Amino acid sequence: MKQWKRSIWPFIWGAMSVLTASQVIASFFLHSRLGLVSLRNVGWIILWVAGFLGVIPIITFHRKGGVPKGQEYVHTAVLVDSGIYAVVRHPQYLSFMLINVGLMLIAQHWSVIAMGAVAVVLNYIIALEADRAGIEKFGDAYRRYMQKVPRMNFLLGLMRLLRRRKGE
Image 1: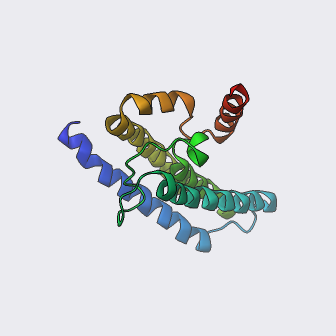
Image 2: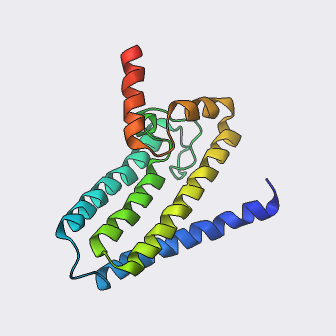
Image 3: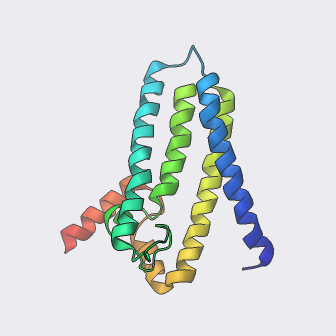
């Protein structure tokens, strides 16, 4: 990959992180008092789901990813395609996106919505880069995994998983 492309990823990560942190803080102070309560409730449910999707990959990678002792969970040595990774390829990026959407629904304020929308797009771009890195690290095995498991579509991933299990 060209050097300029490599150097842009820390900027994208940083921008996404700052936007999400700003969105969290803004949600405490800038929320619509006229907002719909039902949307707020859906937002809280989405945040709980996001929390689950954010934690499960850490546990899964430590158990099945061949992470060297003393290393962070992201330093997997084995392609993990079971557990949550049999449903979606990027559960943590999906989690971050759900946090953004949940906060949009809870706050119902234009600035929180704007920050969240940009953060969602940046998370998706980061997930695309993660797929490229997966191909670079695991080669054809990752390409086959990409054909089997959707990037972040949880419902499609569940349907495909059930079909695969039914066929076994």
